[in-house]
Length: 335
Image (cartoon, rainbow, N blue to C red; front, side, top):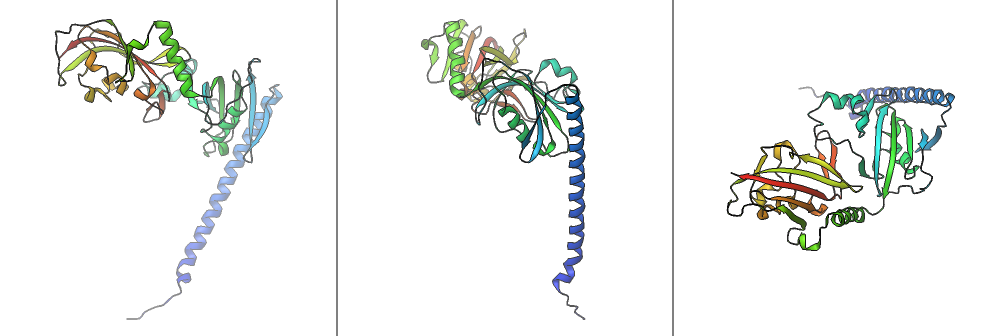
């Protein structure tokens, strides 16, 4: 057998040349596409400026983005800092005006993805977003950092400061509130609700970590076990800006929905494909009877915690982080 010996470099150098050429082509393609995107954005901004819009150029991480203040509240002056929470409305569009994402109900009819996938977005709430500041795209973070509480602004963000996909995004944001202490903010929401509704400390169930009170007591002579099901009507809401935002409900139903009559089984139980019941809700199961109408305040540690409730795919928020809940419940039957 004849053995042919070759230098290792002789074997790999053709591949290295091909790789080098491919890398050069990819780099050239990337640079060309980025330049094309930049040129389109610059012309778009020039056109808007020619119409009298006072759009400012801001350099961020070596790239130009553009900032337009649309309105402001002269009585404020607070700007968000890293790890603050903010309450905002916003619309994210591409440069052609197509909506990529929004939480504003007035824009829902123009959001093609939302209209095309109604089941996917069946739990989506068009409500102001409460979110932590500083962990979005670099362009969005910078734009928000320039805003004061009460401002409305628009950011024109190249993809290099967004998602790197050669799609310029245009974010329009209304900054309603800056929250520097999120746990204190949530406690204040709960305290105000308690004061308005006469909920005192005697209604606090220490073992469960919730407030619980009945507006109508049920029939205690009808017994049920952990293997039974309770048929209930319920309404689940969360606190935000002294309002209750309903995120799951069958309150209008006359027949109700069946849930396990067991603490262990009802925690995390998802009725009708809705939001999973929380630890705080499960803690009240033992106090219920057929005919009971009750209300619970579930502090966020017994609710959805520091992360809130997020729809899995595609990800979108349902209940914000650090947010306490209110459940209204009526027990209709036991099976």
